[in-house]
Length: 210
Image 1 (cartoon, one colour):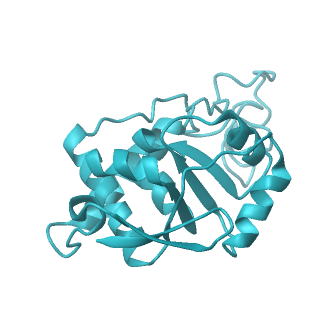
Image 2 (image 1 turned 180 degrees about the vertical axis):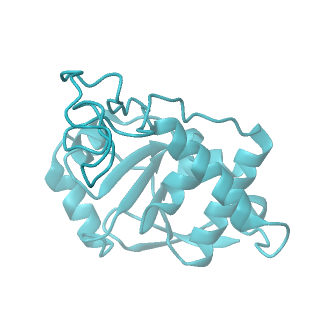
């Protein structure tokens, strides 16, 4: 698959670059592509969770243990003490406890999910290849001008570089709808969670090899 290469002004340079069909041109009807994406994204999001949620149960709430009402004849539920879940401020029944949400997924399935995600973005014409560039200084205004040139000012954009570029990173970190990533670190969730993907030429070469 060949796509046009643009400069940072949003102009077509007249050059073409080849996108590996094994990565960007897969047949999404083969196999269970949706389930593969589901497993990978579930694993990725689960690994981001801290799992530190906790609520107090009956034995952990600190109230008097005095029996507050008669066992029968009160016309309501039996309430042994103020820690009862029936009462306001009482302990919670089966509340959340700290747990580990991390899971494992084999390497080949993660790679397949990434290829499926990149193919889906390519099919939707959401991938733009840009000449290798950097900013002279870390300025948010530089990124905003770049986004306007590609008519992406109000879009969620993923910029992919072969290695971290400090000036670009500092320029986009304060923009809520912009994210910078290394080509080798791409995953299915990061690829799909954006409206457009700007790939530099060097990053395309790395992704073609993945």
